[in-house]
Image (cartoon, rainbow, N blue to C red; front, top):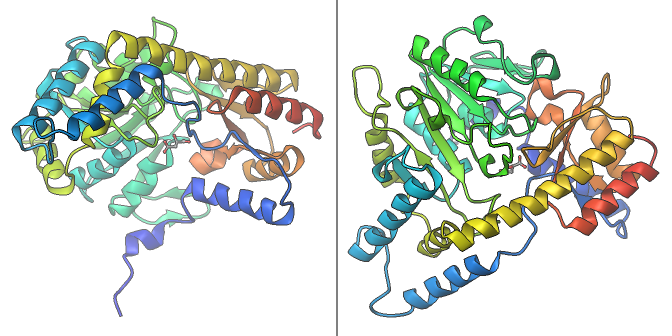
Length: 409
Ligand code: MLT
């Protein structure tokens, strides 16, 4: 018999979102007529906008001609498409802070996080915000970089957890933090909805510089920042190019959760001990494990970066942010303290003294609304519930109405 991968055996339970789906389906088995509304996983619901659809349609037509067809991106036409997209991201997204050759196009931020763990290997030491998007911890476990799980603390021995709670305004106390090789940092944060200020990111960059650490900055929700004083990219911070790489995605701001298009930006200054450039190794990993983002999705991303596409992105983001406002207001009316939901599509609600899974069950059973239990994001998420603003407006309004009607959560 083949031995099970011991790293996978260390994962304490199933991945968070399938587990939520399991509990949702279990309710439906008992109450098949229940009209369940999901404010759980951050899954986009609104149709693709007209300029994007036109871009995708044109892409399909182009691929249907002998002159326009391209396969793998090593052929000249595939290369031209890829280079156009990198150049447009460099210009329109990063305003020149990152050059086209520093942008690596992919099928999404989550997939890139997984491949980054392969890039850095099992020997690195890792710090994660707590709570955090589960992929950072679970992916590090699978990569063998975390040591054993301590069920008492709900933590992995080999990881450094950076509690981010209302008590520290969701920014970790860096003075108390030991050195690690990698620091996963997400802003706007999933799940808390907190957005780090310029000053806080300056502190983080300085900390990484002092320690020779690399920041893996997840900016997948950057397009949801509406306050222009807040940084949308780590590369807005001086010195970040020497200590950070950034993963990003078109899943949420333009509804590409199913189309799939993301990227990782790795500045040429970012190097390993001894000077080997991180970007060069990343290129090697990507060339080995990935055959390029769908060329149709790349055409769609090009359309998204046109002026019309960017305007439509603003409308899509605005739609979800209005949902966030409605959710936040509804929860506040219920007397709950909430965080986030202003420059991020997640509202993080406090349920002091309660177990997140118990509150999750109560809301699911009482209001038929799916949420995400905070403890699923790490030990410091206990006592919180995450409400996602991704949903149809009528569902969001109905969910809030039901939450108000059901036994107070
Ligand atoms: C979530 O936290 O709901 C995620 O954003 C889902 C995902 O994109 O993997």
